[in-house]
Amino acid sequence: MRHPRWVIRPPPLKNHPSFPSGPILGLTSPAGVKRYVAAAFPSACGKTNLAMMRPSLPGWKVECVGDDIAWMKFDSQGRLRAINPENGFFGVAPGTSMKTNPNAMLTVQSNTIFTNVGETSDGGVYWEGIDETLPPGVSVTSWLGKTWKPGDKEPCAHPNSRFCAPAAQCPSMDKDWESPEGVPIDAIIFGGRRPEGVPLVYESFNWRHGVFVGAAMRSESTAAAEHKGKVIMHDPFAMRPFFGYNFGHYLSHWLSMERRPGLQLPRVFHVNWFRKDPAGGRFLWPGFGENARVLDWIFRRCAGGEESERIARPSAVGYLPREGALDLGGLSEPVDTQALFHLPKAFWEKEAREIRAYLTEQVNVDLPAEIEEEMKGLEERVRGME
Ligand code: GDP
Ligand code: MN
Image (tube, rainbow, N blue to C red; front, side):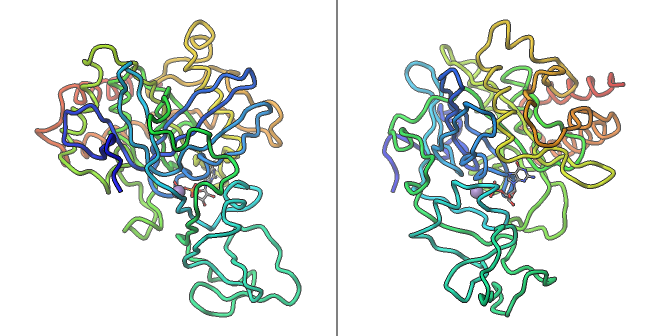
């Protein structure tokens, strides 16, 4: 059913920069200040986990408005507002456990449909990374209907097996999750699965650069996409499968927000939880609840003022957290921040070439001049890298 006051994927040049693929969450700081952010990550890049996060930083609260779709528009005061048009969650099962996503586990205890997961002989469900030992005497049937034992080579659940559960059952739903006005958005967070070269977090220099960052999004492909192997695919705004009209016009629409008087444009960030140690292949960042440390930095950037200036430094790709600005206190394992934020020149030369080729091939004459300018800006900054 369509809510009469909200429109998804409107024709271009109305005032709705709506996008699916976006969790919406409320962040409350230890000081009791609350801000909402909307994110856009491609499939299997951590939307549901982010939306339901239990922050590891003491005193912080994360509340969920939605995990998958944000419809956004500016209100009459010029504030960007977002609603979640969905009533439930359709989440990836493998990897979901009381450790990684307790709120999801608590949400799926009843009224839930599971697809392509393993089934236990006592009527339960099972999947890779559920982190539960099987009680004695309980056996498992895999998603393919075969007898399955822990340690088998074949997985018991399909990598893209899912749970489908009512949102109201999630213990961390925000009190305004069904508010027809939507919640006010202070930051848009783009992101993807990038094993190499892309730092944990950066902020765009300004709105126009932020639109370019959205246009240049790429991510390692997953089980949900049509490609089988691991390839880095372009997925601008995490909208590649959903664009309802010409992508060049879509970009112009986003860019036009800057020219409309009285709008408070949100800040634009890019995150990557998935950078790997080139030597060992391990994730460099613990992720999940620890991502609260990145949200904390984003939150402090949104506050503006002197403190927000102090915690950021410009780089070729955007603003990075200044040395020591990410709160890493109390991490159970040390994190190699050098490796997490390193910008290898050869990588970014190749990245810029790929982005230019994509924009040329896919958008061509419809590419807005501002995006071409941003492309040149990135190429120039990359040339100046050490
Ligand atoms: P969605 O499809 O974008 O909603 O992604 P999910 O939240 O369902 O997560 C997809 C996969 O990424 C799951 O296997 C998660 O366990 C994993 N994942 C999510 N967040 C993180 C993170 O911060 N770090 C790591 N390493 N994996 C994550
Ligand atoms: Mn999801």
